[in-house]
Length: 88
Image (cartoon, rainbow, N blue to C red; front, side):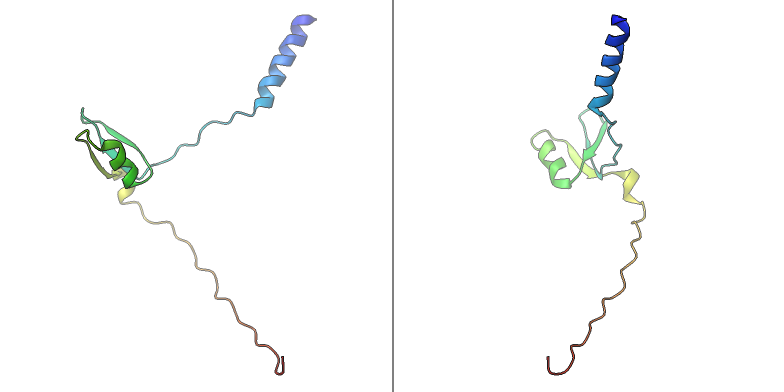
């Protein structure tokens, strides 16, 4: 009985933690490392340059994302202005 209660408590505590897996993300900038490997984990060009400063490494745009079409966002309809009644 104790083992069942202990197992139920353990399962309940792990379920209450609410751990979710990390979402995959494509970063737009990469850095070429010393051994000709690419680290594509920089959200801005400046952050890549900051990490590469003083090491002789170079930053470039992620080739997997360089030629991807921009997402299409439909422009919202223009807002109509209402006229105030005369004498307002």
